[in-house]
Length: 270
Image (cartoon, rainbow, N blue to C red; front, side, top):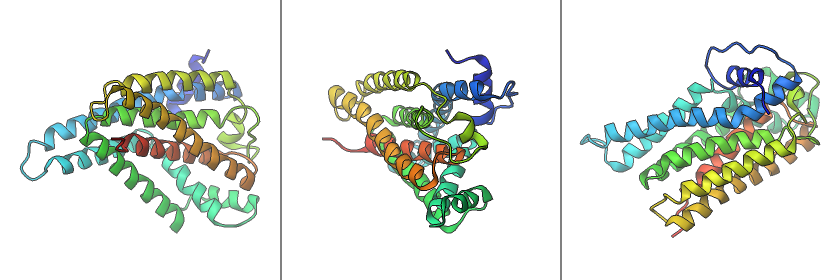
């Protein structure tokens, strides 16, 4: 079972909450990863509240018609999520893309990622990811399942990180977050969280009035597996290219899985 030191470390690492991390070691780091889906769900619930509030406010105005109110709400929700996480995963996405796009050997690519500055391709990936997130979430909000789609996507992004910390996946460096959590999460923990999220996704789908309860349930579960599958493909490439994972890679995988999940739940399956 995840311990409280892991929960404190998860809140310190993955949120803006002013929580003292307490013990920081491999055991606490593993526990913090095990807590990350739950922490993500709490953050997503807050962002979903922003989404609902924005739609209620702006749909009543004469300037914003329903389509625009959905997009505005989605943009505010995604921004809220970025602020609540300090942009940690977005930063990881930009750094990972810059490192991979450098076409340099692994050690030099890792140095590019560690540099901190954002290159042209990293900025383009960052902008593209945010744009897709907003458009996909806006479409889901327009068809009245935006909050469910947002929570599912955020938690699925954390599942992608969780699976990337299971045994058999090495760290690219000997220091940093990647080295601390690589191989530290038992597969049973990742599998248990995945099963729980799939059950939640199926339940959420039962309330999807756009496509019907059965199709909605299937779409929610498919979103989880497609997102994890895309993250798996990206992770395999990164491990081959860099020799393992880093904290930036974990953040990138989280954002990629979240974006994929939002795209699947936004799809029209009629």
